[in-house]
View 1 (cartoon, one colour):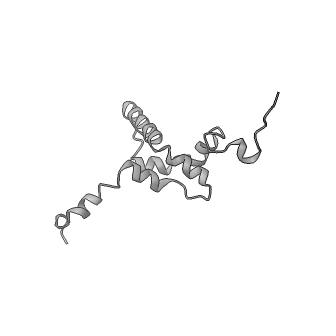
View 2: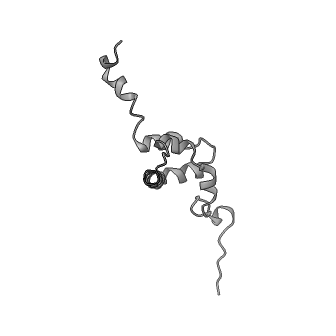
View 3: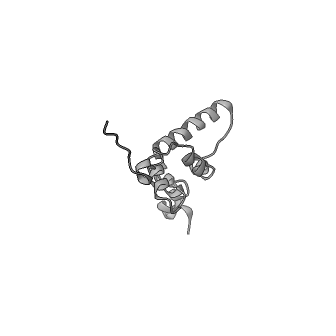
Length: 103
Protein backbone atom coordinates (compact mmCIF):
# COMPACT_ATOMS: atom_id res chain seq x y z
CA UNK A 1 0.00 0.00 0.00
CA UNK A 2 1.49 3.36 -0.96
CA UNK A 3 2.29 5.75 1.86
CA UNK A 4 -0.23 8.37 0.74
CA UNK A 5 -3.20 6.00 0.47
CA UNK A 6 -4.06 6.09 4.18
CA UNK A 7 -3.70 9.62 5.55
CA UNK A 8 -4.28 8.59 9.16
CA UNK A 9 -1.37 6.14 9.15
CA UNK A 10 0.83 8.76 7.50
CA UNK A 11 0.00 11.33 10.18
CA UNK A 12 0.39 8.86 13.03
CA UNK A 13 4.07 8.56 12.14
CA UNK A 14 4.46 12.19 13.23
CA UNK A 15 1.82 12.47 15.94
CA UNK A 16 2.24 10.69 19.26
CA UNK A 17 -0.67 12.41 20.97
CA UNK A 18 -1.02 15.62 22.88
CA UNK A 19 1.47 16.47 25.62
CA UNK A 20 -1.18 15.59 28.20
CA UNK A 21 -1.74 12.15 26.65
CA UNK A 22 1.99 11.54 26.51
CA UNK A 23 2.35 12.62 30.13
CA UNK A 24 -0.38 10.31 31.47
CA UNK A 25 1.01 7.41 29.48
CA UNK A 26 4.43 7.98 31.08
CA UNK A 27 3.39 8.11 34.76
CA UNK A 28 4.92 5.11 36.53
CA UNK A 29 2.35 2.43 37.29
CA UNK A 30 2.86 1.80 40.99
CA UNK A 31 0.53 0.75 43.75
CA UNK A 32 1.09 4.13 45.41
CA UNK A 33 -2.13 6.05 44.82
CA UNK A 34 -0.70 9.19 46.47
CA UNK A 35 2.03 9.22 43.82
CA UNK A 36 -0.46 8.81 40.99
CA UNK A 37 -2.63 11.62 42.34
CA UNK A 38 0.39 13.87 42.84
CA UNK A 39 1.59 13.45 39.26
CA UNK A 40 -1.88 13.85 37.77
CA UNK A 41 -1.79 17.38 39.11
CA UNK A 42 1.73 18.06 37.82
CA UNK A 43 1.31 17.63 34.05
CA UNK A 44 1.34 21.36 33.26
CA UNK A 45 4.32 22.05 35.53
CA UNK A 46 6.39 19.22 34.05
CA UNK A 47 5.49 20.25 30.50
CA UNK A 48 6.52 23.80 31.41
CA UNK A 49 9.83 22.46 32.72
CA UNK A 50 10.32 20.66 29.40
CA UNK A 51 9.58 23.74 27.29
CA UNK A 52 11.98 25.80 29.44
CA UNK A 53 14.71 23.18 29.08
CA UNK A 54 14.01 22.98 25.35
CA UNK A 55 14.35 26.76 25.00
CA UNK A 56 17.60 26.77 26.97
CA UNK A 57 18.83 23.93 24.78
CA UNK A 58 18.05 25.89 21.62
CA UNK A 59 19.93 28.91 22.93
CA UNK A 60 22.98 26.85 23.84
CA UNK A 61 22.90 24.71 20.71
CA UNK A 62 21.98 21.46 22.49
CA UNK A 63 19.18 19.14 21.45
CA UNK A 64 17.27 17.80 24.46
CA UNK A 65 14.94 15.69 22.34
CA UNK A 66 11.20 15.42 22.09
CA UNK A 67 8.76 15.46 25.01
CA UNK A 68 8.35 11.65 25.17
CA UNK A 69 12.15 11.33 25.43
CA UNK A 70 12.16 13.91 28.22
CA UNK A 71 9.50 11.91 30.08
CA UNK A 72 11.46 8.65 29.70
CA UNK A 73 14.43 10.23 31.48
CA UNK A 74 12.32 12.14 34.04
CA UNK A 75 13.26 11.29 37.65
CA UNK A 76 9.72 10.39 38.76
CA UNK A 77 10.50 8.90 42.18
CA UNK A 78 13.11 11.49 43.08
CA UNK A 79 10.71 14.28 42.13
CA UNK A 80 7.94 12.76 44.24
CA UNK A 81 9.99 12.10 47.37
CA UNK A 82 11.68 15.54 47.27
CA UNK A 83 8.29 17.14 47.91
CA UNK A 84 7.00 17.90 51.39
CA UNK A 85 4.73 15.25 52.92
CA UNK A 86 1.70 17.52 52.53
CA UNK A 87 2.50 18.06 48.82
CA UNK A 88 2.73 14.28 48.40
CA UNK A 89 -0.75 13.89 49.88
CA UNK A 90 0.49 12.59 53.20
CA UNK A 91 -0.92 14.31 56.25
CA UNK A 92 -0.01 13.70 59.88
CA UNK A 93 -3.68 13.11 60.72
CA UNK A 94 -3.54 10.09 58.50
CA UNK A 95 -1.16 8.44 60.96
CA UNK A 96 -1.88 10.15 64.28
CA UNK A 97 -4.82 12.13 65.59
CA UNK A 98 -4.51 15.87 65.94
CA UNK A 99 -3.59 17.10 69.40
CA UNK A 100 -6.01 19.65 70.76
CA UNK A 101 -5.32 21.78 73.76
CA UNK A 102 -8.13 22.97 75.91
CA UNK A 103 -6.19 25.64 77.67
